[in-house]
Length: 599
Image 1: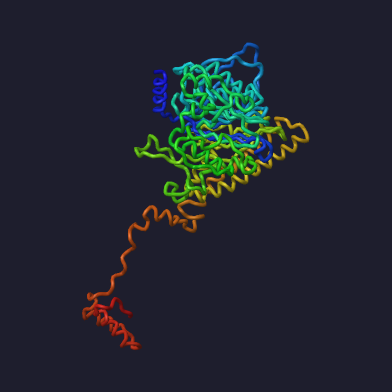
Image 2 (image 1 turned 90 degrees about the vertical axis):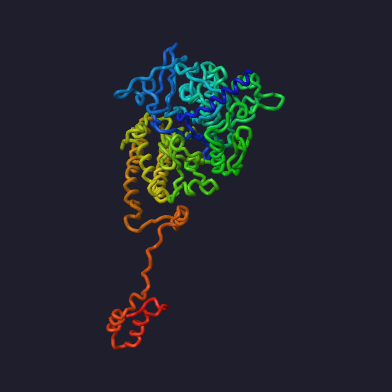
């Protein structure tokens, strides 16, 4: 009976589909798999409308003994937080009220500074985090929202950066806190009830999975170390498979991983090792291939040829948890993966009628808008990305770098921010999604990307040219400050000023681009000159050849011109030279086999 009730609860949660569920893609690169020895980890925050793309800096703090840390309910929409607990970026503005905590946990004596967006991203010591929502067979509600769980993945990501400098310790800290205080997901449906983080430092990285326990008051979690020479992909579905409970170097976990599986009859030790995904995932959400296609696509970009088809990704270990890439990976390679629409494959989203004549790979949301049934392919690059970030965690030069790209990766410029900096340029901390601002990097990139859609395949060439130029300049800027940091101590104030100046350059350059695109491609002309037309394949697809026919040809001369007056007038017009031939033609119109005559 207990198993039946559990199954019913799972099915009820599966019927709930909430637009608030995020849909992110995470990548991780071990230090021996990267081109420069850095550990790389990244996330595209692929939310929905109303998301908060601000990048904020949260200062370090000292806390009195016995202090309590407030915990807030995380909504992830703009503004994601209002209050005085996280620095000036979040302080109440006109008309805003501070959020009330839903509970507290004991505070530590000192918390580290970190950069924050929807989730914590990197702290001053180079500990980095990336997040992706997953499905799970158990879910819970938050305290004050119909449940008893206190901690979300948003809170756990920030707590990890506040309290730890090493990835292994961070995993253990947030895992224990979730067990003690309870974990809740983005919503209590099968889609958003569980979560995954990638947590990395300059030496190692872990893939961390978590879901609520059946009571809704604790948590089930596991983490697997990424081999130094491997890469990994997590895309809205658990990827950890068989856990070796004896290997504490490569696997960390709560005891509930085993106990709950045994209690619920989800695992029999006699059948082999516990497969975390098979036991605790609830598979892909939205549609089949929603997760798997991105995993396949990212590994494809890492040079690995893996199957592109399967029956059920939960039960079939089609893709490895991690794998060795064909060649070393650098940050620019990570940028390019987030701009991937499966070009050159049979799933190429820049081809086909849905892409239109200008090969636009984006597909607008249809759920709740149309009665038509179906699904689009889920690409890695997508228009609804709030922001994408890459943490390049290392000890060389000026230390760890955060590369932050507001809005869709295809149209953004990844902007570098040193983890040791103590400020965010104004352009990157301004991002109200409902109020266009010329001071906002988010709006500059969003504006450019949407304007480019008037002639996507053409206009995006202009976007990519500027994008490549600015990202090359960004790498050159980082290299210059790395060299300075190797020679002498570089202050946070120096870093703040240097990167703020570059932020102004990036945003000003981008705001010039929309006018250039419109002037170049307006009204279907190239530079208001040569018509650009449409590609032949698209014209054929939309029935151009079946459109209105050409105008009728001038009718042939007929017997209506064969009356005496017409022939007489025709002959009278003939010149003396060649008169006979002309006259013959004039009379020739009277013959049924003639259609014209020459004067």
